Image (cartoon, rainbow, N blue to C red; front, side, top):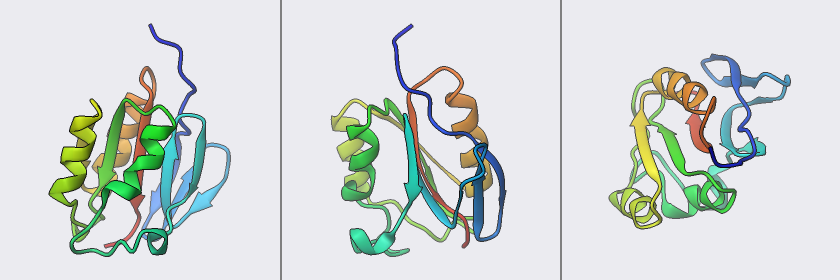
Length: 124
């Protein structure tokens, strides 16, 4: 089994809030092997449509994520640009796109034995 830094686990979540096992909380989160931070959409000009961009996921890959989980929001209003999926595929990174609660469940499961990264939108 390859060595990798563990990704922080999400302990609790509700509309507008994600809380990690270490107690840190976020509205929207970028999680990756060895780290976590607020996902600020303004950094890349992300909006619900056209959605998650390659620049949004680059940090996850730069931090050694071999699989990425992207949340579409609780009401699936956050799109993912086709270019983002293609970019991840070109990097050899497996990607899953799911509703937020399902994305969190899969992310926590994958993180038990894989270098996983994720972008999580806690509202719509």
